[in-house]
Image 1 (cartoon, rainbow, N blue to C red):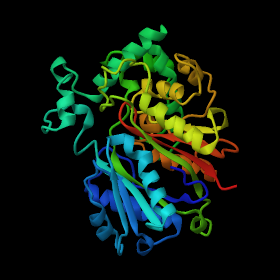
Image 2: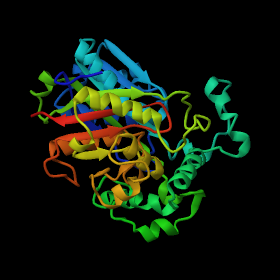
Image 3: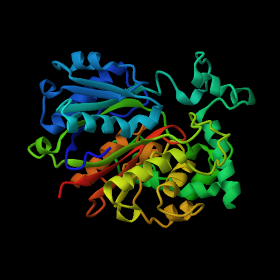
Image 4: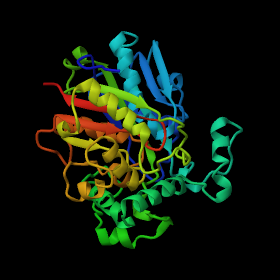
Amino acid sequence: MSARARAAIAGIGATVFSKDSGRSELRLAAEAVRAALADAGLTPADVDGLVTFTMDTSPEITVAQACGMGELSFFSRVHYGGGAACATVGQAAMAVATGAAEVVVCYRAFNERSGRRFGSGVRHREPTAEGAALGWVMPAGLLTPASWVAMAARRYLHVHGLTPEAFGPVAVTARRHAAVNPAAHFHGRPITLADHAASRWIAEPLRLLDCCQETDGGQALVVTTLDRARGLPRPPAVIAAAAQGAGRAQEQMTGFHRGDLTGLPEAEAVARRLWATTGLGPQDIDVGILYDHFTPFVLMQLEAYGFCGPGDAAAFVAEERLPLNTHGGQLGEAYLHGMNGIAEAVRQLRGTSVNQVAGAERVLVTAGTGVPTSGLVLTADT
């Protein structure tokens, strides 16, 4: 879909990112939503739409009650974990572009560290189609996202003649940016390539520093019409394009049978839509905010979106050819299923990032990889 010149992100807000929030997930959601509305210069009474993830535990109507909102004319949820991040903004943009709503808030909030931990493994799975798919890999000991990604990462290294050190520049870049970001968990704690190489194995070829954090917190984004956004206090981040994509024979991070494990067909599908909709290409992007739950998939995304050729992404990152994850990413700032990355893209376009890229006018944002996914191209209002 295209919302060019019709929808924009007008407000961003977040809670503190922590390892033990001491608050309910509903309270985290309400705090983030209120912060985003205040940033946009709006009130709960202005909101008539809400979008979140199917995985979120705070229903739209409950968040509306907690925040003091009135009637809702649009509410929606997007599936597939982190793959939903950019799609929530896409849903909101479609709603305001078609007149289904005028002010839509996208949110995600969880106690992912203190409450339940994705990295602890799959202990129980309801008898669903998705659960059945995991039955092909769980008996072999592949119980965690890290173990699923490790299979694809091993194949990627083998095909391109690389070693696990190829993932190091991604981790180092994220931590360098996080080190100067006061909101980041790893504020003041950069790492070196040697640190990366010395970190312990999690699931070979993934080391500890190849894996994102687990975080308690919430993030919200306010989407409205571009015309209305222009009258609000903050410069609007124009939603130039939004897209979703699922590859042929797609599964949730376990599609080991789909032929080539060294690529991300779902990301390629999103890339084609974004570039076709905007008329832009990789060469036009000023900042990349790429979903970084695991470092190998950052490399594969760069290749899927056409920034470099197959097997060339490690050198691309090492040579700093594109500013990446200037907030520190999920490796360095916080793991909020990619929503905090969208907020960083907005800051770059406003000129308020702690790692500001001079003249940033076009930002690519991606969502979860290995799963059905989504992406955005956000631009300055020029």
